[in-house]
Every structure is written in C-alpha cells, then in structure tokens.
Amino acid sequence: MIKSIFDYNFNNQKVIVRVDFNVPLTDNCEVSDDTRILAALPTINKIINDGGIPVIISHLGRPKGKRNDKYSLLPVANYLREKLKFNVIFANDCIGTKTLEQINEAKKGDIVLLENLRFYEEEEKNDENFAKLLSKNGDVFVNDAFGAAHRAHASTTGLPKLFDNKKFVGALMLKEINFLGNALKSPKRPFVSIIGGAKISSKIDIINNLLEKCDTIIIGGGMAFTFFKAMGLNIGKSLLEEDKIDVAKQLLEKAKSKKVNFLLPIDIVVGLEFKNDTTTKEVDFTMIPDDYMGLDIGQQTRNLFAKTINEAGTIIWNGPMGVFEMPNFALGTKFIAEAMAQATKNGTITIIGGGDSAAAVHQFNLNTAMSHISTGGGASLEFLEGKILPGIGILEQ
Ligand code: AMP
Image 1 (cartoon, protein in one colour):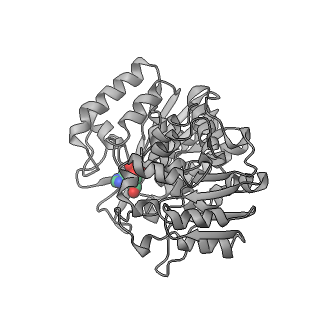
Image 2 (image 1 turned 180 degrees about the horizontal axis):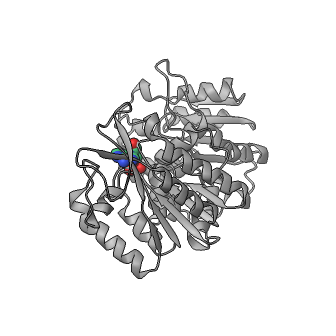
Image 3 (image 1 turned 90 degrees about the vertical axis):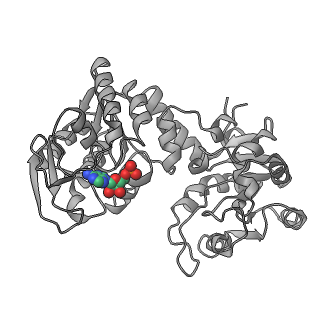
C-alpha cells in the first residue's frame, strides 16, 4: 500500500521532500515559469501546517554531475522568498555537515531548500552511498516529483528505500496517480484516447496498452501517415517511419480484433513545404498529392473527432494533431483542446498527458479548463504504457 502525506502528521519532523523544481530560467537567472513551484505548494504547506520542516530537494537541468551556477536552485529560493513569502534557508549543497547544520538551525515555519542534486553524478547513477548521505537530511521522506518518477535515481529510489514505513507520496503525486490510475483501471465510459505527435515509434507501447482498455482511439499528428502507408495509401512527402509500417499494421489488426474504434483523420491540411507560410490545401486522406506533406487535420476530421469527444466519459490526450507551433497548422490541435474544454463542462473527465499537448493547452489558455493536466511528460507516458514507475513502486510499504 502507498501512504500519502494525508495519512501522517509531520509535527516536529524534518521532512525530506523530493520535488520537481526543474523550472525554466531567464538569461538573468530568474524563474520564467512557476508552474512546477506552485504545483508543489499543497505538499509544502501541509508539512508546515502540521508543524514539520520541509527539507526540499530537486534537480534542475542537466549539469552532468558537476557544480555549475547556471543550474543553481538559488533563483528558486529567491522566488519562494520574494514572490511567495516563505521563510527560506538555502543550502549551497544537498549533502554534508554544513547543510546538516543549516537544517538543524531551521525553526517551525521555515523551509530549507538544498542545492541541485545533479551537481553530483551519483544522483543519476542511483549511488547507494549518496542516497545514505541524503537520508541524513531528515526523519521522513516524501516524493512529490511526478515528473522524475520514471527515473531510478538516488533521490527517487535509493533514498526512499532507506525510510521503511516513513515514506509518503505528496499531494501532487497523489493527484497524478489518482487521475491517471483511475482512468486506466476504472474509466467512466466511453473511454477515448487521443494520440498524436510526430512519431509512432515513441507511442507504440502506449497505443498497445490503451488498445486493451479504450473504447475508441483517435490518431492524429505526424504518426497518422505511417498508418496510412500501412493501409497502402499514398502519403506524398508526409512524415513516414518506414521501419514502423509493420508495427502500424499490427496495431490496426489488434484494434480490429479487440473491437476498438480506431479513428484516423479523414481529411488533411497539406503544405508544399515544412513552414508556416507555405502553399496549403485541404484534401481527402486518400488524395494526398506527391509533392505535398500533411501538417494538420482537416475540417471534417476536426468535426468527427469533436463528436467523439462530446460523447466520451473519460478522455486521455497525448500529442498534438498537427504542427501546432506554426499558427497555420495549429487549428486541429486547438479545436481538439476546445472540444475537450467543452466536454469537461459537460462532466467528461479530461486528462492531458503532459509534454507537447500540455504546452498546446497552455498556448490556447485552456489550462484551467481540463480535469487534469499531468506535470510529467516522460513519466505520464510510461504510466499510460502500463509500467510501474520506479519512483512510485518504491513507495509501496
Ligand atoms: P511528440 O513529441 O511525439 O508528441 O511530437 C510533438 C511534435 O509533433 C510537435 O513538435 C509537432 O510539431 C509534431 N507534429 C505534429 N504533427 C505533425 C506532422 N503532421 N508532421 C510533422 N510533425 C508533426
């Protein structure tokens, strides 16, 4: 069984909290997007309100196992102090006696933020000794870093191993497990998955797993063209993964045998070149001209997909419907996001599986219109693939 922070009172405890403060910074080293910081606040506040002291650990960027000021968590400490008015003690190191002294000096109401875990190569190597040194920083362990839960690193697996029955999932992680887990285990039906994005290769496992559970799978984005090729259609200069044509055939077969409604685009916005202001037209999926490439779903497809979304009980969406970074090919993705927002209002459970679809939903200002937007790109993908994430599995007691 996994225990959450809501099963425990942290009074008088020093609580090591693994969060995902891997935030983007400006050239002046200021936090440019605080989404991940805000997402960790329910856990931090619960610990403080209980009378505990959060000792926060995180990674930021890829400093490759070496101290590098560019990847310091100091800007996050400043943000917590100045913008969110926390009493923050910043430790220049995540292990060591000086750090332990600072933790011991902390009083109720303070939070301690330790420097970037990845300044040590031992973090990503899941080094046992490094995990032991980290464990000295507190009495109990909380993992609230869903975005890092698919990595078996010292702070996500080696460290919780040392805390027997004193390890917990944080509020954010619990929300992720509940939304994604419930959708997979006992979805409100019809259960619809929308899978898009560039390549079929990165989504094979997820489609395979969802074919076991969904009533309908909607396919959009660049990967649709490998399916079309597998169906013997001409795809012009559209994105193709030649070595995945057979996999696409197998997935189509599996959908048929499992009686899963497998919806591919029926019309396509095609362009002459891969750029925003290229010549475009909308064509039937069977009529893609040789010198054009598919860059977005067409109007009939948008309406077809929206109808399915309207009738769904639960929807999981991962991957854009077109090259949404270019305004002329963002319409399909925007339409889907808007249809999902409307479905949410009508009681459908709508889940955005991180990564590019989350970015798209933010781009269209619809981030508050969904039931849940996952904070983990890779982590939510692996969860939807049906894998047990190492950072979650290790919290079983
Ligand atoms: P992924 O990381 O696999 O979810 O892919 C996201 C990327 O897929 C985005 O950068 C989109 O621009 C890209 N994409 C979506 N549709 C297409 C398409 N028809 N052709 C090429 N790239 C696409």
